[in-house]
Amino acid sequence: MQLLPISVAITLTVVLAGAAAVGLVALALAQLATVNLANLRPTTTEILEIVKISLAVVAGIGGVVALVVAYRKQRITEAGESREQAKLFNERFATASGRLGDDSPAVRLACIHALAALADDWEGGRQMCIDVLCAYLRMPSAPEPEASPDPATHLAWRAMREVRLTIWRLIAAHLKADAPIPWHGADLDFTGVTIDHNINFTSTVFPSGVVRFSGAKFLGGRVRFDGAKFSGGSVLFGGAEFSGGEILIYQAEFSGHVSFTRTKFSGSTVQFGRAEFSGGRVEFDKAEFSEGRVGFSGAEFSGSTVQFRGAEFSGGTVQFDGAKFAGGTVHLDEVADWSHPPTGLPTKNVPGLLLRPSALSAAVQEPDRADKSHPDTIRPS
Image (tube, rainbow, N blue to C red; front, top):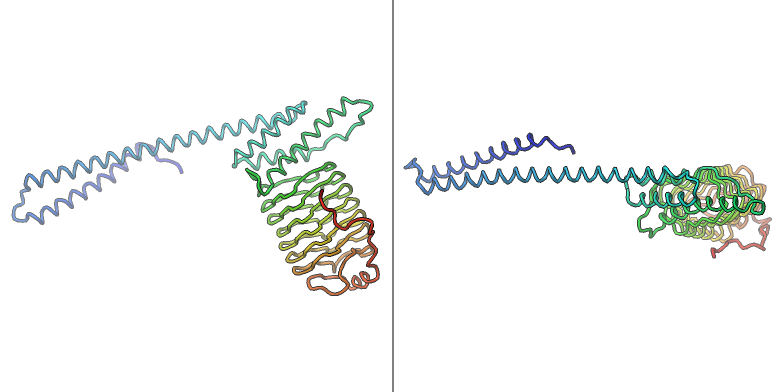
């Protein structure tokens, strides 16, 4: 709120206080007049009372003026401090982000930690700091060189890779349920990132905001979302490719919006074992299950709407062994390709599970098609 000029503020204060004083004196005189109607000349005692009231009013006006001046000084001091703090935050941001392209991995690591610390301190600029960290992850990285012909180049590549891994660790740590300074609710844009290493999002919380893995490529390593809570906002894997490694979403809770629309499951092991689909919407629309293994073993569908509209089950293994359908709706009635259907589906009608007409007979004819040499659910170690 913009402050009035000090001259105007004091003038208004004096005028208002003076008006109040005149009113008080007039009231006092009126009371004295009613007491001494026979003798309109006030007595010495009455004059002293009027003087006391006048002095009190003057002192009150002075006190009000002093309060106004003190209040303005405090507001001016706070505004100055706020500007200085904003200036300091912006200087820290410029310094940290400006050296992210330094040739030294050590300098880049220092900048990454500086940005994370700034995001903790600067709530108003937190999203901006996070955007820079995510943008770094989206930047293309050089392929791993061979170590034997040029060890120095390989070591330099590994050092730069550590910068990316550090960003993943910092973001995951701030998304934990018990994070000291959480970044819950921030938008995270990992669009098109390539993941070929371990990432641990265990026990993270996604209560709001938008998290995008759209077009991401999961090529290797182990990505863990064990015990994660997708309770609000949107988490988007649309168009992602799971072609290698393991993605463990074991015992996760889905009550918000999660989209795997047009995702390609072509080689990874993706486990939703014992996940709870208790609300919201989870979409596998037009997803392609062509290779690899996707497991919903032991999952509980108790409230979510889970859609597989236009999905293609053309290869690989998709398992629903031990899944519980106790509420919500699971749409497997409008798939585009059922040539390699999921295993473990109920052999009779179950409320909330919508299957295409030929699905029940296929489940009866091929109940043991799954490769029993592999466990349905991979427990995180």
